[in-house]
Length: 288
Length: 143
Image (cartoon, rainbow over all chains, first blue to last red; front, side, top):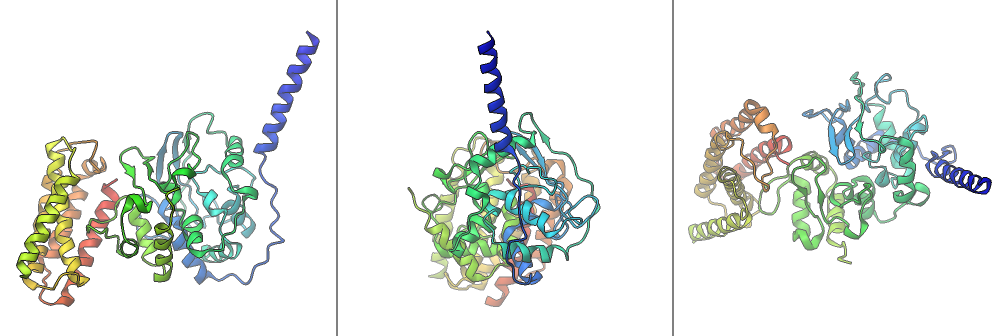
């Protein structure tokens, strides 16, 4: 009897230890990062490519710097409500330092060391280059402060326990949370513009199904389907993809809709060479 | 010759619309989807002219623009009935804020009513106006 009790205790303790270890937020050291002087103009460009405003402006807001939050994202896990990420010290991130910003983008962690829910696409953002994050931060500090209180997410148990996100990160975040990419086309699509976050289907616990990369996914808001942008499904030429990213016109002259309208507003302001690189990336996704 | 090409293009586009809407069961949804496709079809004519994929013809361009204007005017009526279909991309928000939806459609109608296409250079502003209105409406009211 005693042996079984001891065995049970040791087993439970081991599981608890493993859980604690896996879900423990990262200890992040930023002071070793080498950065050249941050440039807010370059940051403004990164802001467009990253598309923070697509989710963080209030519903119906057209001014992209008004990052008051409030948009709702219905998912199988509950409703995520985009937080205020303006420079409000009370409701937004106005009290943050660069280290806090870096840790949020790169590791999906709050300044207090809590995991963010992966509705915030930090799997993609973890690949953003340090200098780009610094430039983005320089631009961020020029943005207005919006005094709109945050609304709590409406997430079901057990997904509402942030500590559990550590397990999710162990499964789906790139190794060491950092994955620098040398090829700019890949960097634009996979890190900055994070296209796969919507256009790739997900597992039951929300991880990207990489074997169906960009093959389209169920619309988390319920109705409709986010289309495949895999070249063999899309059937568009590179020029047609560039046109879509520039004007929102599809080859049949239907226009972008839903969240893609905000995305196109951003991509239309990227350089033609970057739009071409995005199209080039999409054209060369393999069918394997 | 230009007119023959225009008619041929319209026929091909109409066939593709019929194919695209196959499987839609609700007649009201079908009606409004056809209206939207017809708008895209006429926008495409202007777009192809602007890209010089088809020759510029002021009569055809004006006719397409007027057709878009008519379709835009007919949009609120086409969406008046809150019909649903698995293939529909319309958001419920349309009927929750039907006045705002109607105003958005009317804005495009009014913009095009005061526009004209006489030369090649007139194409771009009309097309940009149309695209802007379509995107604004689709951003809020289409999945």
